[in-house]
Amino acid sequence: MQTGSRKREIEFDDVSKRFQLAEGLTLREFLPLFFKRKGFADAFYALRNVSFSIDAGEVVGIVGRNGSGKSTILKLIAGVTAPSEGEVHVMGRVSPLIELGAGFHPDLTGRENIQMNASILGMTARETRERFDDIVAFAELEEFVDTPVKRYSSGMYVRLGFSVAIHSNPEILLIDEVLSVGDAYFQEKCLVRMDEFKRSGVTIVVVSHSMELVTEFCDRVLLIEAGRITGEGAPSEMIEQYLSTAPHSVEMTPN
Amino acid sequence: MADFQIRTRHPLRHSFGLRDVAVYLGRFWQRRDLLLHMTVRHLRGQYKQSVLGYAWAVVNPLSQIIILSFVFSTILRIPAPEGTPYPLFMFVGLLPWIFFSSAISSATDSVVNASSLVTKVYFPREILPTAAVFTKLVELGFGLLILSVLMLYYGRLPETTSVWMPLLFSIHLIFTLGLSYPLAALNLYFHDVRFLVGVALLLWFYLTPIIYPVSLVPAKYEIIFDLNPNALFINAYRRVILYGESPGIEKVLLGLLIATATFAVGYYLFKKMERGFADRI
Image (cartoon, rainbow over all chains, first blue to last red; front, side, top):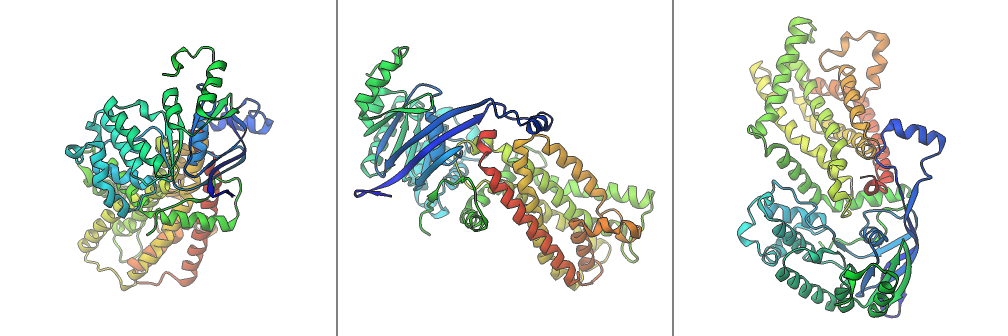
């Protein structure tokens, strides 16, 4: 698993992910399909034979159009979903910044939700206690920490979720467009923190439509199209290739 | 304690054997913090929006004692074994039944209800049904208070054999958990499961000696009660609390065997189905 001095941290080995289009069947709908061995015909491949690896400390961007399979890759790394074929190896504590605050309970206070969310991300009670003040300070919610989060604005919600996630001491950080939420000031603050993570050697996987962010922030870019990896290399090259194959992407011009 | 780390292959693996089950149970144990948080969260969510709050945990069993005693003792004249007032006799069976049935129905919905979490971040999913079952322990605690008051009212002191209770209940709890896991998982695949569970629990209630003593059952039907773990546990509770008898070591061992087998199979099936959870929501 060693390549030179760097440890391989994420590895996709010929991974495919298939989704059944007919989901949420009732038993009445399922049984006939099951006995006729039908129903597996309308499967849809979100990923097909994807192989790549990411070393510890690398910052990798995944670029592709909507529905190309970017988020599926993040979900596979997070361990939320399983590959249909192939193998996914992930070595290290993953912190997904995917739709922050998903685990918040509206009736619980900010404090209680911090404890809860930290625990979901795998922090021990002691770690949470030690970092509690930092979490609240970064989210700038000192005054509202004992208010039920249903009284929070959507911005406060996102700030708190983000703050818990970045204080969970991640070895692998997954970022899915979250930097597009929150006000400009908070976005800037997040970018500064991302840069600190990058310098301290945290592995980061970024999914973003912001070509500017990808160019500036990433060491390497994976280009993905219709569930297949179509390119892998330096950010500027890959983005050029991406833009040349995506004719309708006027809004995605660099800068 | 060191940082919690996942140094392994993908948490949702293709196939696994018995040794992996031990690994999963170990990882589950590592996350007991989260289990506690989830349980507290359930409790808060359950009572926060209601005016009476935790008082509901008392009102529910109390109203059931009154109505069931009236119907089955006063109207239908079902006799309790000699020397035991019917309400007391019935409640010692009803209390664990309320725990069992409310735990099972709440656990069945637990994973479906947490869909926003399940699709975003990984944690051992069995924490969800386990927390749902543990939440009901609080109601059971309130129920035990009612039982104490009821015993005082009838001038009865608990028999010394009541020291069997923690052991008996632990076995009952393992059985309950073991049954809740596959139901919670199946409910994601087929939404019929929750309705099926509702019907099954209703039938199970009448086929368990809660409102009648097992001595009234004709001999040729006794097999039903020998095969019903809840009957086994409830009879044992009555023996140790009301009659001062030992539950019978062979009954305890039988209960333990059924409970561990149910847990092992249930947990295995749950982990097996866990792979597909996020894709089914």
